Length: 398
Image (tube, rainbow, N blue to C red; front, top):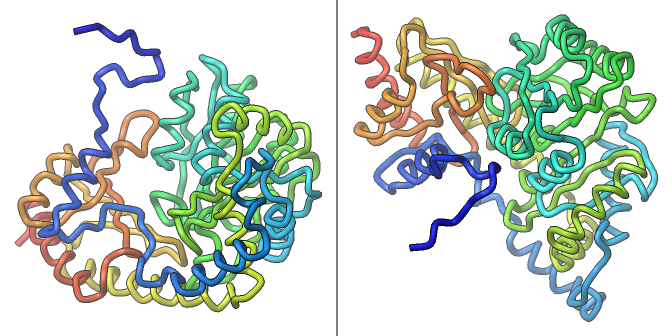
C-alpha cells in the first residue's frame, strides 16, 4: 500500500481523541453531557421553512447562482444592525465577512496571521477547536490564567511583556467554553487598552452571548476598541440552526479583504440559500422572543444541573455557575487521570468531556466540562446521580 506523506498539520498519531469521546457518548444507553449541541426541540423548523420559501420566491435564481465571497449584502447589513443593537459594535459593510460557521473564522484568521513558531495567547482553559486550528498553522501557545471572572488582566499583561512578538490573543468573554465564566466590563475595557498598548490582535469569539438567563448584559470587548485591534466573531448556530453553518467576523476593511481572498480559495462563498433564509427569518419573526425561549430553557436545565450536583456529587467537588451559555466546568480534587474517570462513567452509562483537550499546556487533573443545553430535564437528575456515584467511588467518599 502506498505510504501517504501527510503534512505537519495532520496529527502524527492520526487519532481524534475528542471525536472518540463524543462517539462513545453517543450510545443511546448513555446520558451524555458531552456534546455542545443546542436543544433541537427549539429549532424554528416551520418558521424557517416559510423563510426559505420566501427566499426562493424573491431570490430564486440569485440564491442558486455563485455568490459574493464576502456574503449576501442583505445579510451583512443585518449583521451590522444586529451587532450594533446587541453589542454596541459598529462598522461599515466592508467590515463584515460572512463565513461557513464561526469555525471558518478561526481557520481564516489562523491562516492569515500565524506563521510557524508565532506566539498565540489563550485562556487557560480554552475552546479546544481553536487550539487545534491555531496549532495546525504552527502557533506556539502561551496560556493566560483565569479566575471566576475570566481571564486575569494582570496575567495577560505579564504574558504580553514576556512575549512582545505575540501575534494573536484568542478570548471567549461570554459564558466561556469550557468554563461558562463571563468577563466583567472593567476587564473588557482593560483588555482593549492592553491590545492597543502592546499592539496585538485580539480575536473575540462570542457564540453564546445572546443566551443569557441571569445577570446583566456586558458589552463586547470590541465596543471598547478604538483602533482596530479587536476582531469580533459570532454565529447563528446557537440561536437559529447550527446546520446552516453561518458565522461572521467584524474587522478592519484591510483585514476583511485579506480574509475574503483566503475564503475564496477555500469554498468560494457560504451557502446562499442559508444566507437569504436567515434574512427572511429576521424579517418575519420575533427573533428576540425566540432567543428568550432558548435562554429560559437553558436556564432551567442549568439550575437542575446545579441542584443535582449539590445533591449527588462529592462535597469536595467545585463547579462554575454560569449566567448563560451552554456549559459549566467541574473540578474534582484528588483525581490524577480524568480520562480514566470518563471511562468509569461510561460503564455507568453517563458521559462528559474530560478537561485535557481544553488546555494548551499541562492539563488540570480532575477537570471536565458538562453541557446542559441538549439533555431533557427528566434525564438530567438521573445522569448526575450516575456521575456522582462514580465520582464518589473515585475520591473514596460514601
